[in-house]
Amino acid sequence: EAGVAQSPRYKIIEKRQSVAFWCNPISGHATLYWYQQILGQGPKLLIQFQNNGVVDDSQLPKDRFSAERLKGVDSTLKIQPAKLEDSAVYLCASSHRLADTNTGELFFGEGSRLTVL
Amino acid sequence: QKEVEQNSGPLSVPEGAIASLNCTYSDRGSQSFFWYRQYSGKSPELIMFIYSNGDKEDGRFTAQLNKASQYVSLLIRDSQPSDSATYLCAVNGNTPLVFGKGTRLSVIA
Image 1 (cartoon, rainbow over the protein chains, first blue to last red):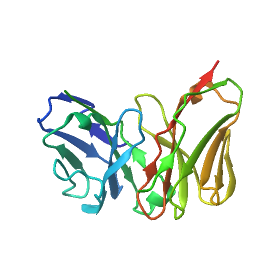
Image 2: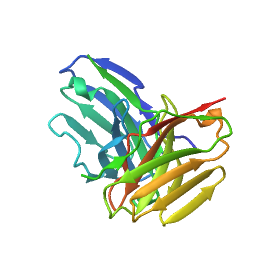
Image 3: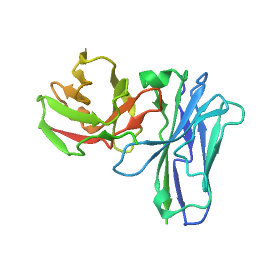
Image 4: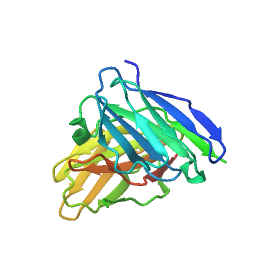
């Protein structure tokens, strides 16, 4: 079974530029998450989707970050304009059901490492 | 703001010893507790979860939960160099997972 796919793996941009990350979850997984992991810290949830609806985006900086999951499968996360503090690994994760958040059975992709200069 | 606290380490143990990793959490309403392992440059992977007070064993791993003290721990017996990684504690209670900063474990051969 294929895992969670993310691209690009690495991206370097200058501040105030824009960037987009793509995620394809495990087939059949209805719940998709975007996490931000800054070096030396644990992952922080940015947004959670159930199918194509948003479950939680309370920690998403909406003035610069946006995310969508139009057909309930793939998702994109966009940052515009980027700031230096956005340098981090952006992890996409999926789970079969929303209830799996209680079992913690999230499957993470390899992540997209963003460096903002 | 729900918080999950871990000692960042590094925690160094000799091969074959028991590694003890600790975690405290602030939200008394937390219901589920998880340990993820993250190798350098890789994504986190779930290794243990625990819901009830007491111990839960899975192979060389034992998770311990004390809800009264808001304390979770992970014991790794017969530590191997391949266990060297960052261990992330995560908790939730009808909300998305909140992760700690992780403890870096180094097992010395």
